[in-house]
Length: 220
Image (cartoon, rainbow, N blue to C red; front, side, top):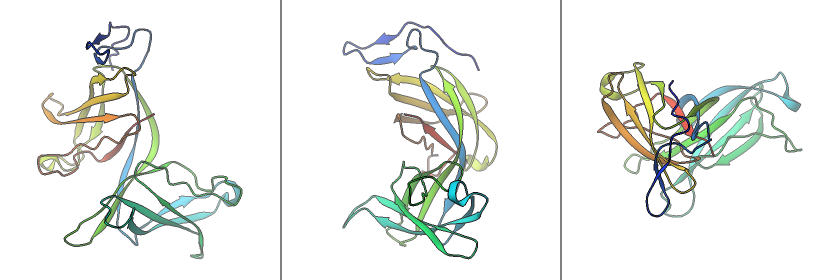
């Protein structure tokens, strides 16, 4: 990784940063990179207990995908936490962008690791619903022009092939809006996404299919 540190900032008349790095700042964006998993209602994954459930083998189940209100086009995921006997210990309903956090009666976490709800969708023609979860908290610190590697998912059948993500442009008086580019290893542009802090970067191909097999989140 080659860091572009200490470059002079180029701005528009309104003061928006359009290129360069903030003088004296060692990175402009922090990325959380993790595993991406797709679930449908009824699917489960294994979790590990901490705190009052320390050492217990637990299961998290996607119960349903629910609308945020009548006629709503946005959805939430409802999840149950089960013990080894199948008893429901806790239920959480969360919106995309939120952490899936199970807690005890004192408000303390009882499941190890970080899990984000990336999105929750329902196909109006079939009523089929899915969610995408992101697992993990590997941190990557970027300045303008920096790249990091991800694995291909659905781009031209390039499953598991390495691709590059580049921080191409930084926008806004607080440098909190970004343009990221997805590139082949030869530098060919696949997709461009404009995001702000707290967003997930979800690259797609010409058909709207996900291209990257990992979760990529821009930290706040």
